[in-house]
Amino acid sequence: MRIALLGSNGQLGRDLQTQLADHELFPLTRQEFDVTDHDRARSVISALKPDIVLNTTAYHRVDDCESQPELAYNVNVLAVLNLVRIANDLDAALVHISTDYVFDGKSSTPYSEDSVALPLSIYGNSKLAGELIVRTTARKHFVIRTCGLYGHAGSRGKGGNFVETMLSKARNGDSIRVVNDQTVTPTSTFELASQMAVLLKTTNYGLFHMTGEGGCSWYEFAAAIFELEGVAANLAPTSSDLYKSPAIRPRYSVLENARLKHLGLNRMLHWRDGLAEYLKSKTSFANLANREG
Ligand SMILES: NC(=O)c1ccc[n+]([C@@H]2O[C@H](COP(=O)([O-])OP(=O)(O)OC[C@H]3O[C@@H](n4cnc5c(N)ncnc54)[C@H](OP(=O)(O)O)[C@@H]3O)[C@@H](O)[C@H]2O)c1
Image 1: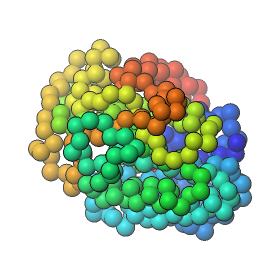
Image 2: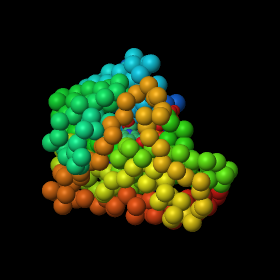
Image 3: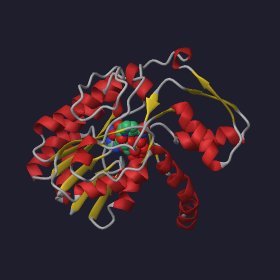
């Protein structure tokens, strides 16, 4: 299939390039066009005549979205509406990435695709608005909600990834305090990209939750990183109440990959096994990057 991959140098975009290599892939970065430039987006994507438009772009600096709602809505909603129109005109499927932040975190059991979304932040609202536009108007679509992404390339929008930040703090001998009252499912972009490659071979369109299995607090995730790497760290749990961040985050946002499981397509590992795989693959990734560099 011909796939136009938007946000191709993001952390998910980079792993998708590897996992979708057996397709005719057209990696597109902000240099080709900014998604908020609707005319340019239309002309570049239309010229490629893709079967799939895969959108990984987002404005996802969660706290900054609170003070810059226009930017959040421009990238996460209005640009997405434009992509829907383009995909429909080309009779292409639109693949769009959404987030666990569409939920309010009041549940204590995993959210399925049928759970009611009630975002707490501008970011969550903008992502829910974007996904609803796709779900209601894109004729062929996959909307994929995921959580706590980390990948070798590091998040372009947020700068780096949690695993590497923790390891670098430990190496510097910093005192590390990590919140123990937000339960998530850390998900490796390599695994997510590989699961997406499985789904995109099908025509099971619609909404999907796609995260690692199980859940943990960010503190427990940090502890697992140090344990698996055999690194001694000065780590202690803390509470998010001590940090007055502008955006409210859900206290619990574990997602159940219910639809993937129902279709017999779930390949996602438990978050701890996904982390172990990521840490193991770091050496080969570094060698490859050195060779390419
Ligand atoms: N990171 C997480 O923990 C997380 C959790 C749940 C869901 N998600 C969702 O997963 C998706 C991928 O996230 P990620 O972690 O891979 O993000 P990322 O590393 O920041 O990648 C996003 C990519 O989108 C590009 N982009 C952003 N705004 C753009 C614009 N206006 N025009 C064109 N390109 C633009 C960025 O380009 P530049 O490199 O030029 O900035 C970057 O390449 C996003 O939709 C996000 O909302 C992420």
